[in-house]
Length: 638
Image 1 (spheres, rainbow, N blue to C red):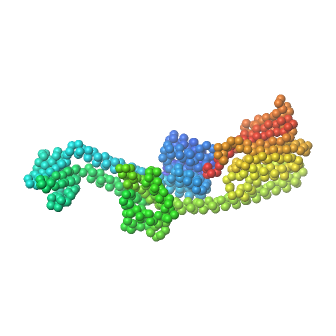
Image 2 (tube, rainbow, N blue to C red):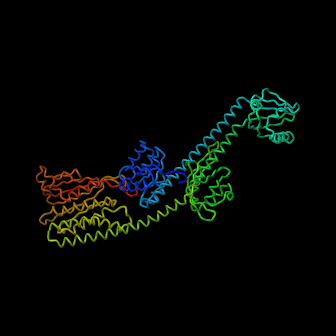
């Protein structure tokens, strides 16, 4: 993995589905990773903050059920610590991709696309994280050196101005050179006036011809005297780099000038160049192409790897911005220009854009283009930016394959719903036939009850199969069909008048299955017990939203009431009303009342985290109220 060892890497797996988490943990541990599971976003945030042990990467499910979702947990973690986060999702719609990318640039993995895709995505995330760390270290070091260089230059200028040192004069008529204390110190001399012939011996011999010619050009041709050379200090023998500027006074026949010891500057420039070579080598070694843009002139240095990514040799592309511009895919140019405009106008700190570049052979490759301003003008405008190109063609092609696989998966899901629907219809028919054959009324009633429970699921799958939306079902449509089916299979159902008041609420199929069974049981119980001796009556079913923050959340109430005989216990109550609750372990019904249907209602009410209350009036009927909160909608998670 490009020199990166994966053995012992620590992954925090944030997944609320226990079985899915265990399966993914096993796959990752087989690859040599150390895996810790967090069942929700709050636990993941607490784990990172408490720093139980270092985490190298977080594999984050977006849909975490109740509480904090995956993107919220990721943002909380990144606010505290910079950790690579790779998202898990069951969706590939654009809004989910954008939602994940706003939090993390390490991408996302679509669930159930195979272990190879998961492992490859994790390896790619580790590579990207390592490359980012290398880039950050090298850029920080470069900034530090440049800041040190600027500070050194400023301090040198301030010292020269304060001491007025570094001045020298050459009297051509006397062949005498004199200088300030600063000039004497630079040359390592003791005294203020010396014979010119003696001073000429201090510069290194190889520079003598350059200096003599520059002096002749100044005196005879009035050409500027501005040279750099090296000297050997007269007192210590130290080799120094010198910058000298001079002017000629013809009337006095005197050359006067200024010298500057630029030894430190030259060393810093050398170190800077060496350091630049190092970080460029590191980036290119990791497969990244490097660009260095001098913004006002449009000159751009493109590294050999930058050119190699699109199939060119180092000598085949010039250092001009147009070389890049003309190779950007026309469809990508608008978004590239928007990203550059935001970058150059300081609306974003870092330039980042994914786009295609035309290769030498005419094909296109995807690149991740990123950069940062390294120098600014006096008025704050960017004048130099440095960045990288990373070849992401394989990743983009993988994502395209994943999108195609998801389309196939949706078709397969519809076929699965169709087959489940057929199977449930067969089971319903078998129960109906058996109910008509048995001689025992109790057995026939039990078979009809079982038929009703199967119907609650069959109707749901029928609606899913016929719907374009596999994530939500209309509660009004579902319950209308369900109660009609229950009345049709119940003997004497035509004696009962049914009144429905159903608000049209969309509910996720996962929550609608237990709700359908609960309503089936409540309606069946009312039909069996509320109207003895073939008595006529009315049953009313109401569904309403009693609170909400968005169209996809809030509290729902389902009320099933009748005008039958009521519970016998109501006549024994002082106020003629019998009250009870039956949800999970909080049921207050007497044991003799806890038949299979009541137990089923109790367990399913607890499953949806709801409450179920009974109010029965002596001789006036009963009312059962079920209240629960809608689950998070599909578009808020995976």
